Length: 229
Ligand SMILES: *[C@@H]1O[C@H](CO)[C@@H](O)[C@H](O)[C@H]1NC(C)=O
Ligand SMILES: *[C@@H]1O[C@H](CO)[C@@H](O)[C@H](O)[C@H]1NC(C)=O
Ligand SMILES: *[C@@H]1O[C@H](CO)[C@@H](O)[C@H](O)[C@H]1NC(C)=O
Ligand SMILES: *[C@@H]1O[C@H](CO)[C@@H](O)[C@H](O)[C@H]1NC(C)=O
Ligand SMILES: *[C@@H]1O[C@H](CO)[C@@H](O)[C@H](O)[C@H]1NC(C)=O
Ligand SMILES: *[C@@H]1O[C@H](CO)[C@@H](O)[C@H](O)[C@H]1NC(C)=O
Image (cartoon, rainbow, N blue to C red):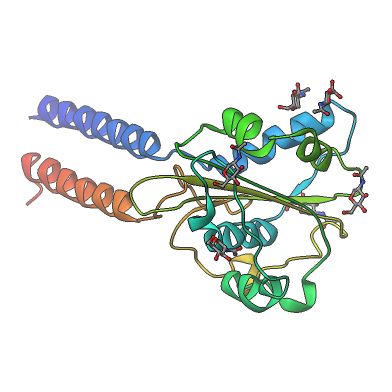
């Protein structure tokens, strides 16, 4: 009997290991954060300072491309210019950016592609489409960066990328209300948020719900077999 329980303990341990692996493999991280890392690596290689990854700024970048989602052409160019006022009247409120902290935007890059690109390719093909955009990335005045990624239609491309740069004192601008949480975004990816998102589509919590249900089922099975009930 003692031996049997010991064996079930191993099964439990193994089960939880497998569950943990399943949860992490479903978590694709945050590709907007990966892009911020790539941008910073490209800057530091030129001895330029690292930019602060700002969730407030990146959420505004996400709003910007959401407004441009129908404007990606067949040849992967974005012809889109939202009105200047939208930044403070629509984008910031949608994110929960505290308006008095709305800072100076010192650079903007928008790119799109018909198919999804992984961060290194998104950097070199969607963001750097000319020497002009590379010089925006290498501008000395920036202090903060934020990247947003969105899928134009709910189940397919094109995909849009936006990098916004600002030149304010670090951490004092684009502050998100509710102690930095801001307003939860239902779709897309934005950097600095700690929220995982795979490729700019809907941020369903379904994966986590399914995992929780499986964890419960698993626990009941194991407890039942060990004679707990
Ligand atoms: C890309 O498409 C746009 C709009 O369809 C067009 O104005 C532009 O000339 C095209 N550019 C190239 C390089 O083909
Ligand atoms: C997107 O493209 C449409 C159609 O060409 C145009 O009417 C609209 O103004 C564009 N959107 C923005 C925000 O520029
Ligand atoms: C850097 O950005 C600032 C603010 O947008 C701009 O005034 C300046 O011309 C840029 N510098 C270069 C070298 O592009
Ligand atoms: C920075 O990015 C540009 C454009 O993709 C690339 O040509 C250059 O090699 C990069 N620099 C470094 C140090 O990675
Ligand atoms: C872009 O920059 C590179 C390196 O500075 C230069 O060799 C190239 O001629 C430039 N291309 C254009 C189109 O200006
Ligand atoms: C800004 O935020 C970063 C990350 O949260 C933190 O490490 C850094 O100390 C902050 N800087 C200032 C000046 O508050």
